Image (tube, rainbow, N blue to C red; front, side, top):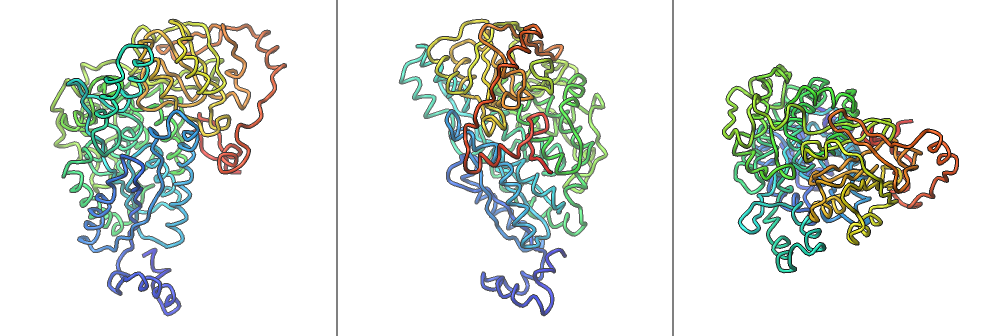
Length: 554
C-alpha cells in the first residue's frame, strides 16, 4: 500500500504515534487509508449537507474494510459571489483546490480518494489535483437542489436574477420580487438547472469516475445517501485492483464527455474545465474538437435555463445513462471503456431506459441536429469564444449589431439598469478575462437583467469573461485572446458593427484593417486592477481561456 511509508516498520513509530493520538487503532492503521475529501461548508447551499454524504461514504468504506479519513476542501458559492468583486475569487479557487489536494494526499500517503464536491469549481479543482497523483479515485457529489415554485410554475436561481430585471423595468411588483426571493431555491443542493455544477457532476458520470446517478439524483433523496455508501464500498475495489483515475480518464472518455455535453446542453464553463482536467490527466483536448463533435451530436435536452425542465425531471426520465443510451443508437459514444463500477460503459447502459421522451428527446427527434454548445472564431476571437447555442433563440443565431463597449461588468450593469441598451445592440464587456479581471468573472447579473427586461431575443453580449451555467440568450464568453493580452476585443469602439453567426460558428468585427492598426498603435495597456494578494499572483500565472485558464508550467 502507498500508505506503508507512513505506517510500517520500526522507523515509523513516530508516525504511528500521531495516528494513535487521534484515536486510530492498530487495526485501522493496518487497512488502506482512504481520503474522504469533503467540501462541506455553511456558506454554499450545495455543500451545507455534504457532512451527511461524507458520513455515508465513510460507512461504505468501513463496510468494505478500509479506514476513511475525512479532509476538508474549500468552495465558493458562485451565486453569492455573483455581481460584485467576490466573483473574481471564484474561478481562481479551482487551482487552490487542486494544489491543496495534491499537498494533503502526498503529505499523508493516502491509498485512495473519494471526492465529495458539488458546486462549480470544486468538481474540476478536485479532479485536477487527483490526476496529478493518479490514485484510485471515485467522485460522489452532493446532488442537485429541487426546483422552486413561483406562481405554480417550477423555477430556479436564474429566475431570481431575471426577476431583478423585471422589477427594474416595472414588469413586476416588489411583492412579486419577494416571491422569487423566498421560493426559487427551496432547499440544499446544487442549483436545480443544467448550470455549471450539475453539468460537471453529469460529466463525472459520463467520464466513468462516478457511479450512475451521480449527476441527477436530488440532494434530498435517500438514494443519494445510498449512492454515497456504494461509492465508499467501490473505492475499496478500485484500490484492491489498483485502478487509478488516469486508467479511466482517457482520450476516448473525454470524447464521450464532450459528446454528452452537447446532447445535454451543459454550461459553457465545461469548455474551461474539461480541457483543464484533461491537461492534468495527460490528455490533449482543445476547443476545435467541440465544434466537430457538436456537428455530429444532436441536442436532446432543454433543461433550465434553455427550457423549463430541471434536474429532478432528468433524473425521473432515466438520468445521464438514458441520454447516453440514446446517443449509442447513432454510434456516437465509445462504450468499451472501463468505469469505476468495474464494468464498461456498455454494461452500465444495459438496463438504461428513456422514460420520458419529452424530457430526453429520442435520437431521431432532437431539439436540434447539432449540440448545445458552439465555439465561434473570427478576427474578434482568433483563438475562439464559447456560446450555449441551445439556450439562444432562433432569431439570434445570426445577428449583426452595433457595439456598446464597457470596460467592466459594473459599467455594463449601470447602463442596462439605466435603460441605455436598445434592441439590436451588442454589449461588449472587456478586461474581465483570466488576466484582466483578474479571475474571469461570471456575467449572470447583466445577462439575466437583459433577459428579465425582455431583451434576450434582441441583444447579444460578448465578453472575455465567462457566464454562469444559468445564463441564457446570445451570451458569448471566453473571448480569446482577451483584452488584457491585446486581443482585438480591446480595440472595439462604440458603434462598431459586429457580425455573429452561430450556425457557421463565426464572429467578426466589421472594421477595416487600417483603422484597427491605428487603434492598436494608440493603445495603452491598462494598469492591473489588483496588484497584491492571490489575485495578483494568479494573473501572472494564468493562461488563456482557450487553454482552460490553466497555469503556466514554465
